[in-house]
Image (cartoon, rainbow, N blue to C red):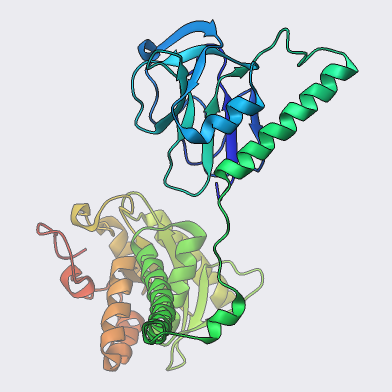
Length: 380
C-alpha cells in the first residue's frame, strides 16, 4: 500500500494479521484509497491469539495515542467495542482501550511499507440513527463519514516529499559517479544477457545431438539426417520416399539409410526391410548402398547397453548384401570427433561407405563425452 489507509472495524470474534498481497478485506471496512500491500484476513502474519481476544460490549473507551483524539471527538457516543485484545501484539500500536484497563480496542498496525492500517471499534448499530431508514439518519451518517474521513486524512495521510523536476539539473559528485557506475553495470548486464542467450543456444544444439542416443521415430531420423550432412553427405528430398534417408557422399556414392530406435537389439527383420528398399532402388536403375543405423537399447544409459546392438544371426544376412551396420552412438562419435578435428571428416565418411557388416570404432564413450560415470563401460 503506497501511502493509502485501510480502516477495519472490529466486530465480534476476530484474529488480526497482515499479508503482503490483498486477497480480501474484512466485511466491515472503510478505506479512502485502494490498498495494494496489506490485507486483514485469515492467513500467515502476526495474529492476536484467540485466548488473548475477549468478548464484551461497551462504550467506555479512553485514548492512549493522541492521534485518536480527533476520532473520539468526531464519533463521540458512536463507537462501541465488542472485542478487546488483552496481550501485546508486535505489529499493533494501541490507540484506544477500555477505560481503566489495558485491553486494546483500536490502534494502528505497523508495517514496513508506506501506508497505514487502522483498527477501530465498531460503530454503534442502534440508537444513533446510523443504518436506520430515515432521511435524517442518512444525513447524520453522511456527516459522520465526512468527519471521519477528514480525521483520517489529517492524521495519517503522508505528505508527498518529491523534489521538483528542475532539481535534477543539479548533481552532486556522488550522483555523477553513481550514474557512471550504473551505466557500466547496465552495459555489463546487456552483454551478460547476450552471452547467456548464446550459451543457451549452444546447449540446445548439444541436447539435440543427444537425441542420437535417446530418440526413436521421426525425431531420430531428423537428427541422423543432420549428422550425415555434417559428415559431408548430401541428403536428398524425395516425395513418396520409401526409405528413411536418401543421400549422396562427397565422392558421388549414393546410399539408402534405414533408421531405427529400438528398446532391445536390432533384428534381421530390420535388415530385410533395408534390403527391400535397396532392391526397389535397383529396379529404378539406382544402385545404392544400404546403411542400417540403429539406436539399440535406447531406454538404458550407455553404461547399461552391454548386449550387442547387431546380433550375429543378422550380421551374416547384412554382410551378404553389403549392408553397413552402425549404431547411433558411433554416428555421434563421428560428429563429436570430426567437430574437434575437421581432418577426420573424410575418414568418417569413408568408414561408412566402405564397411560391409558391422562398422568398427568411433564408439569410445570417453572420446565422446568429457564427463561420464566412473563405472561407464566403453564401447557399444
